[in-house]
Image (cartoon, rainbow, N blue to C red; front, side, top):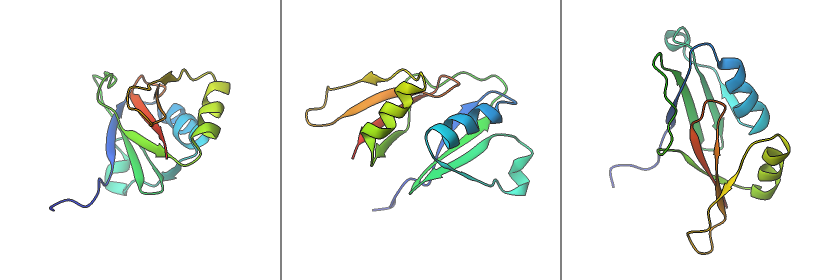
Length: 119
């Protein structure tokens, strides 16, 4: 078994959109922002963590959102989070294609796809 867990998932974001990233990932999703190492901070972007899950947002000059590839996050309080997202105007796309698994898809402010799964 060469791997024990995923350290982080990298998603791209447009240049100069850190404020919108923080509003979504930190303020809305409730993730903790991690300080970027000084050597990487000048590149822009933001890093976030919730439990063992980390999402790193990196600036991409020719930005295109990830429409198919996506992180899938287990949510301890799935109903609470999905209701909060709905109330904030975030579109949730339910997916019941796996029997017994409650899950949905959302998009971050940049159009990157994310999957939320009830734990």
